[in-house]
Length: 536
Image (cartoon, rainbow, N blue to C red; front, side, top):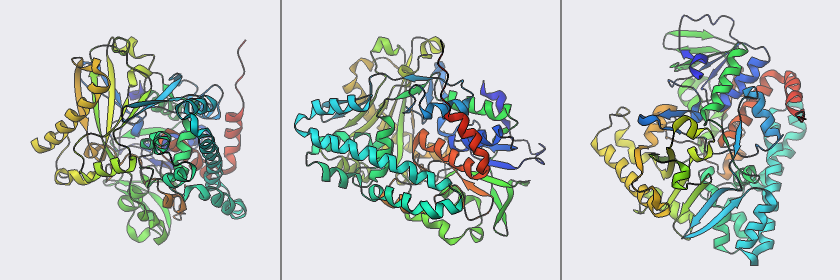
């Protein structure tokens, strides 16, 4: 379906009426583009890949197997939630979300299983049952999660305020959130409880923001945990339905999307953007919205002499970790194999930080961590479209440094030594999968492994990272991670501006659009805030 909404870059296209150019078709960029298009602005989206969607796109291999690359589940999509209203606005109400059920995550730590169940009070009761002697600590943990998450909303909202309001209120909103964000997750957890097992369980979703408890900001942890407290949801038809429906909204409201349109430079004159350059083609425009991350924007697309010095403060923060992923296609359905909808977080070790640190230092030969997702089981349309088959994605932590010797090689042609590294990861991950789900053995039809080099190839993220800047306490002290930059006409969106995942990307696009549309956003907010009429 989506192919009719985008085309290969055409340098002869008439760009004369284009006011806004969005670089990158990830969800942050598409969100901004939808708002601009639906309010009558002339917008073009430029994507360097041959398909749009960023980390929401899917890919297909032989025998019809299809896998997502980044969207594994989303929270806060319950009936008439504000998040659902935003989703409906962005997709014309066509995108449907499937509830993953009572359990959305399961932690398997040292052979013990812990279910994360939907609903805050259900979650509380479940944790009380697991740790009956630590009820007060669990309650305090949930109180802090809710408090920090609430403060984060004001912290991010002040990024979109007009200058005078931000001057009056911004400092207060920043300080109130930084009370939580400046502490590591481990620091807060140790202040709550001395029970290591309880700390491990409550930190089990740390892979969702890509950093161990000892290094991550508790503010980031709280945002992610709170996002999923009411359960997990998956887009019916797979992750591609998200971007396909957003593309449709953009095009139907006069926008244009080009793929194979790699921007070489954002052009700046006298401290303001004047357009972009693709090869020899110069496209003038009033505003440039970059969705390629702060590193990609200021290190690759703008000449250094045009960048204000304090805009480089992001260099104080390392990029997030990279990953391996094993994609599996199975010759039986999820029902036949009794596979769950929930995700599995697998940890082998008592100290979560130590396990992840050893993996990254390559001291650990065993595969001690894995995130396992079952996209076909979550998608109610899978069997109708793909028959009695199923898919799995199994993710492991990685490091771009391990692949430096292969960086100058070409995708799919990196040589035997590279393939041997991928095969080693596949063998170790399959060993874990067969141990947890023995029914898989003998039913694997197709496998494929991606590495940080795969991510770099398709996203241009130089460290092969998927989560942008690392979610450390220092990240939330930076003033350079705002939608509006000090270069007039240059705006930023994407997960560097807010936080990781679908919610963070969409929120960043909303904040960016608010800067661009200013009071014109009032009508859009009003339409989204209006509850749906109940049928019957």
